[in-house]
Image (cartoon, rainbow, N blue to C red; front, top):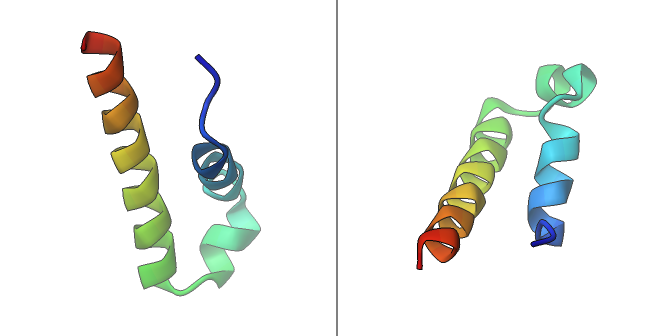
Length: 48
């Protein structure tokens, strides 16, 4: 099952130290939440 585009985008940003260091904390937190939500949705689909 390929990863959704939004998850790929988030997973490119979060390991990027420059993004994490320069982005406002709420933006980084939002991106982390997007990643967690997408991974949870994928887990739900795998189980179902």
